[in-house]
Length: 635
Image (cartoon, rainbow, N blue to C red; front, side, top):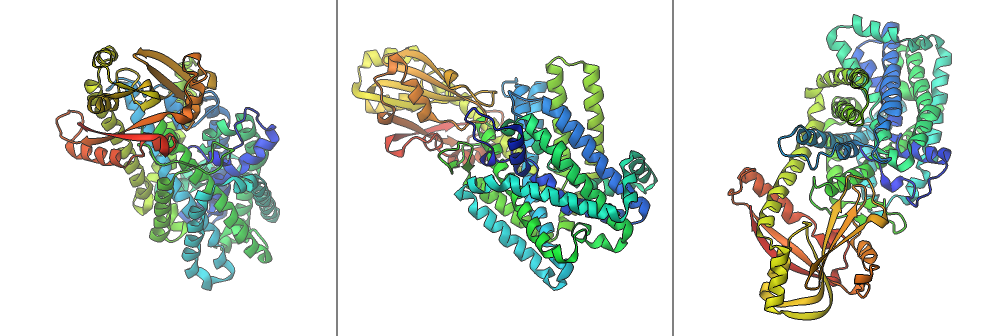
C-alpha cells in the first residue's frame, strides 16, 4: 500500500534506530505483502501455464526470479528510492515534488495531478484485494490434509478479517512491536522450506539464467504466455511499499531488509516450489504447503495466517496514512481521525476508511470465494500503479537536472517491462480485474469531484469576503461591544475576512478584544520544523492573522500551533486554553449557475461537504471552546 502503517513505524522523536533494528521493524511493515505472495504467486503462474512440464517449471521460476530482480531490486531498491521528498517516498511525495497542486488549470502539470490521483486511487483497490487473497490463501492450506474442511475456508477467512477490522480502533502499538520478529522467522522459514525443495531437484537452479524465461515466453502461445506473466506479477505486488515507507525507516534499513533477508528468502522459496514440481508434478495442488513435511502442515497454516494478518494490518494502516495525506493536500474532505496512542502521533484510526475497506475486503471474499479466483482480480491495479510511479519519477529526475537520454533509457526500460505486465494483467479484466479498477475509478472520481467543487466553493467565498481594510474601518466606525479575552476563527484563505466573522459582527454587534484569524496551510514538504510553523500578520483593530504550516504527512495540531503562537511577545497575554473558537458550518447550495461542474456533480460535492468533519473537530479543538456559525454559499 502507498504509505504502509505509520502506526507500526518507529517513533519520530528525531532519533532513528540503528539500521539493523530499523530493518527488523521494516520486515513486518514494508515486506508483509510481498512476503506472503509466496503462498499463491507461484501456484497461480503454474495454473495459468496449464501444464507442469520441466520446461514450463523452469520458465516460470526464471520469470519470477527476474521480475523480483529487475522490478524490486533494481527499480525500487536502487533507482526509485532516490526520488525522495526530504526523505519521504510514495506517489503523494512525487506529486508534491512536481508541484501539481498549484499548476494552472489545463497545464500539463494539472494533467499530472489527475494521473497521480488515479495512481493513489489504485492503491485502495490493492488495499481491498490484498487482505482477501492473503488470508484466503493461508486458510486454504487446511484443505490439503482435511478436504472436508473446504466449505469452512471462506467462513474462517471472513471471521479472521472481521476480527482484524474490529481491533483497529484499539490501536496497533503492541502488534507493531512484534511485526518484525515474527516476519523474520517467516522469511527464515521460507528460506529453509525452499532449500529443502532445491535439495530434492537441484537442477532448478538453472532457472537463474534469463534465457529460460525468454525461451518459455517466446515458445508459448500468446494467450498462455500473457496469462503466466499476469500470474507471475503477483510475486512482486507489495514492492511499492519499499518506496512508500522510506520516510519511516530510511532507505538504508529498507535496502538491508530486502537484500539481506527478503530477496534471498523469496528466491529460495520460489526455486524450492519449482524444484518440488520437477520432482512431483502432483504437488501442483499447493506447492507452497507441500514443501513442508506432513506433520508441519497445520502449524504452517497457523503461521501463514499470522503472517497474512500482519501483511493485512500494514495495508489497512497504510490506507489511513494515505487518506490523511490526501485530506491534507485537498483531495478528500476532512474525515474523522482518532489518535490511538498519546505517545505516538503516527498511530491513527479512521472509522469510515476502516469500514469501507472492511466492506470491500469481505465483499471480495464472498464474491470470488478462493485465492485462485481472486488472482484474476489482483495485479492489474498494482501494475498500473507501478507504471504511473515510473513515469512520475522520470519527470522528477528531469526536473532535478539528470541527463534526459539517461532518464529516457533507464525509466523507459522499466516502463516497457511494466506496460507488458499491465497488458498481461489486462487479460484478467473479465475474470475479476474489473473489481479493483471499479473501486479505483470511484475513489478517483470522488477525489476529482471534491477538488473541483472545493475550488468553486472557494471562488464564491473569495468574492463574498470583505477586504481587511474595509472590515477594520467598519469596526472602528460601528464601535461594536468588545468582549474581554481572545477569540479565534478558522479561515481557509490567507487574505480577506472570513465570512463567519463578518456574519457574526453584523448580527451580534460584538467582537472580542483580540481576534485571531487562524488558517492551516499544507506545504509540499512532508513535515514542517516547529520553528517554521507559525506566521503572524497584523490586520488591525485588535485582529491578528495566524498562519500555521503543516507538512502533508502531519495531522494539523491547531492547539499545539496556537501554543507556539502565544509565545510571541505580541500575543503572550493570550491563554490558548481559554480562547473561544468560532467554527463555520457552511451549507453548499448547488445551483448550476457557476460554470465548471455539472449540477449532479455539484450535488455530490454538496453531500460530501455536508458529511465532512467540521474544522474544530478535525483539528482537535475542545468542544467546550467552540461556537458554530452557520452560512449558506451557492455554487
